[in-house]
Length: 376
Ligand code: KG4
Ligand code: ZN
Image (cartoon, rainbow, N blue to C red; front, side, top):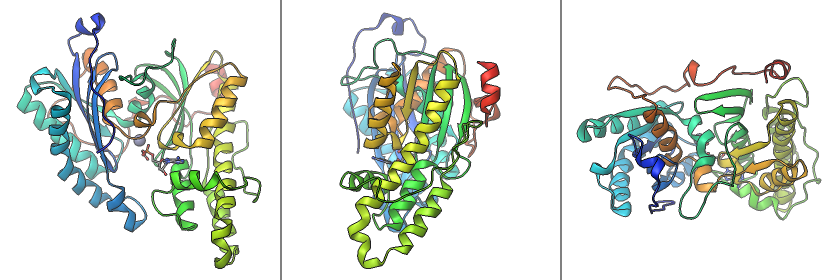
């Protein structure tokens, strides 16, 4: 069981809304998560159960194991959420569930659970794009965290996790322009694969981060790909291949002694590649003064430090949501969902999970920089 927070404060704007509280479910990959979220983004409670131990022996997420675990965990998690928050089903005005994109078997567990509970509770529900959740995470608040003063739309968001590495221009609720994305591996995936090659295990991103603290980032030369100014896309497969060749060239008996330097050099190349495109996007999109970095890789201590320094030097407002809202969680799905419910949207029992986003979820996917200049 993971993060949890409970509590309520008076909010007159919220009490005027039809949907004041939603129950939200997230099961798109290997985290099972349930949350109760208020219309202003206040997280009444959020409980998550990760499955790292179950997937670790296989060195990656096994879809069948993920969906089976969601099935086992989801109802006890919801019961625990109600118990901890002292909320009852009668206080829930609607439901939100991640319906896309993700592992289809995993998504199915959340969607079927939401549809069933919606029938039992007699409440409306809505399907939410998982990435919209990540993009709106910076607005979440709880008893320990409030977003920085003045934070609002529009902003530039770098969503960087095990499954995604995408730059968005977030203009408002439902108005998300994809500026660039990885053309191959996600940054988290590249970190995880590297961790496996150097023998750090799964999931390896946090272990690379830890090992890198003792290493020299200049010890090994690794490539920075996509250093072109006419695209905001990323690529990590060249870096990964170069790192694998490098590791293979090191005699096994020397590997342990060089792990910290290898991790520091590799991590630096990933952070450099992310920051290069973030900087390019910020420079080329006028009036963007607010920046969000979100997703599991935003936990990386080097990325956080470099991004903070970069933002400060340019007088930009940088928002790094707390880690509990950066990694996969149901609270972000609840906040996206409750706003959609309050503007009149809802799904019906025909809602089916989709492994891909819908076309209408984002505009201009694979957005080229030269066209971004003309449009913004
Ligand atoms: O957002 P997330 O929890 O799940 C996905 O949607 O993928 O992100 C998981 C990713 C994994 O690749 C993991 O290795 C990486 O985030 N990660 C990190 C760190 N903590 C987690 N990567 C680098 N440094 C970290 N401290
Ligand atoms: Zn995610």
